[in-house]
Length: 569
Image (cartoon, rainbow, N blue to C red; front, side):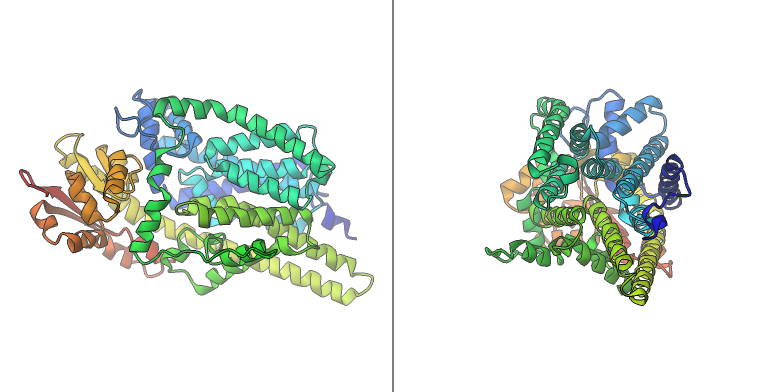
């Protein structure tokens, strides 16, 4: 067997190889951020809370109102600390410091993946697939540098995989730290760790670590206890401060609300009954190919809004099929089967348990899929090398085929990555900075007072730059919106807005039309149209723009002001 294939760093010292992996991923992430300048809408929802904390107003979105208007503790506390350390002087500086930290975490995750691969005898090609797909995944890199918490999730998931696949005297503490980190990053972090743990138990993939399933179970129990100890302080404090341990963002996006909204728009569907026989898991995997699985290796909202070439969609779906079914192969590597099984369970959670999955949730499964693909590449290489003495020509053809396929996959990932960077650069320029930020600044100037209320859906930029009282739908920062929707048993704008009577409305044309269908005269009698922010012509001017549909959704907003002395009823 070719030793160089088994030990990829034979010509490079181990510390140097780690630093090269870290530096490469770190540089790619920051280059992507510098080129696209992309700052995600939801970052500014959380950052308004962060800045209020740094300014001494408490961990609140609206000063004086204790609403748990964020989901990730790390994602709110780290920017708050950065803002405080920089004297609250520059929001742009805080974002860039957060990007640098996130890029470093992403580089650290890549090093952990590299170590996991090296300790489990993956060859150069397989490691290239592992690190290459990780570094060039558009959603992983974008949501690690645009203000979201994905870099933290990637680091702690990589730490969990490392703990379960690399022998150490510190396996339980390492796994416990990974579990606590996941929980501090997202309150549903235990779902992904639990899926990985279940996969390793089911396929006995942790035998080198725990010696047996019982030994591995003891490690898991110890790690779970440490996770609880490290996360419990935040849980208790949040319960005391906000009156509930459950973030209000989760309550606002409750399943009944999202389901009713989807059904009302003709998008809802009820999954058919689950089979009760032994093929249950295989049936689940097959059904999930029609859900969040498809989007694993594609840019954000690529399937929702379209605009991407069919070959890119085919690429993403083919890789997803491999990852979601690989665990079904009895001859597959146990570690890869465990990761594939966790990949399937993670997507089942996103597709059938969460009210609605968003693109920054998908990388939590994506890293598992990338791990599976690297293991698969190594298994095929091992098989090809085992045929060398029996069928030399067949072995050479198989080796060549694997290398060509790996090159095609990595090249495709790189091309999609570059296209996504261009798409997000334009999206940031025309939609975020050119439209939504400008709406926020304009409202701040036009409002009678900071107590003016604004009803809208895209809360982030407009809420942060206006600093007004926001009545957003689904009510991430506004319990009164959630209460109104529950009381009226609807999410229809035409019913909710007259109930809330906000001072300002910021509506997309389709949303304004929804109001007119319910109450035809409402937007002319109770409100006056005062401003239109329209980026349609600017977006149309770009002749080549992958994922154009994503920009179309937010290219036009109409601002309405409530008429004085008007009976909204």
